[in-house]
Image (cartoon, rainbow, N blue to C red):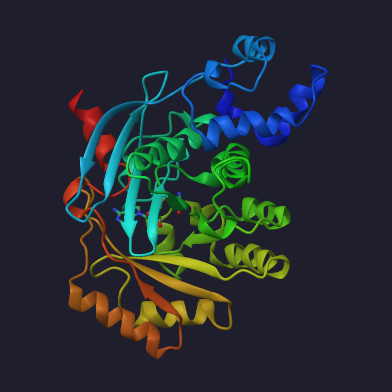
Length: 345
Ligand code: SAH
């Protein structure tokens, strides 16, 4: 059954109009769901009993079961949620000096097969529904409600490839972004993709203001083929073509995520390749320290190596930031908690 959280604002309006009702009811219902964050239809006190009965007939009122929670010393909290069909997903709440950020999943498992990633250890079981994506954000906001705090940022960087579940992710973000929904500003929302070029083009045409991040990890086709199978479908040149198309329609700076893996992608040749690839682009590189995954053969770089690579990029004139490791004491790498839980079951 469709849950009430599956409906975008426009879809809810359409539903109401089809029932011969006034579309403004959609605003009232959205406010109950996302501003007041109620737990049942009955709490919608300015909605008529007959409409509540209709809603109950047509939609369920789903909530997640929290299966496990890990709290890191740095304040990061990783939630393992159990969905209706018993599958598990991870959602992470991070605390930064600029506020709270939610890292949400888009799929149960992932099929992209990146060699370094824990999520890929478990193949994709299914896409998340619109409601399941929205409920991750709502659940974290409910957690923050207890201390009267607010989520500031959303990053679609958890398990899954968001552009492999394109429609549901974009619908969910429209609810999260809606002024009647969770009202998180588009510029506070980021989507991270491993590089599905056709979807980048489609996304460019949406003209939405969300940030786009690309998991690059190497600017050399040979190495990227080895690390990320998606590169065999859309190589660096095709990826850049799609990104240039995006940039031609959106005046937004691109983020390139670059994981640092010891002895693999942090040489001065790698820095040269990167500088060449991004020359003249409105972009910056976010260097990410690698979180080691037991099942994978890769290692993180030492702090010295990380800083050395950062300097190499700076010297080559690139805009670069260094991401601080979060939640290293709590299996922070995407999919680690879930993979562990499923193995133990
Ligand atoms: N599929 C999307 C979003 C999920 S992955 C994408 O590829 O962008 C989110 C980010 O986490 C990606 O940049 C990914 O490469 C990175 N990542 C995966 N495994 C990691 C690990 N063990 N340590 C650090 N970052 C990791």
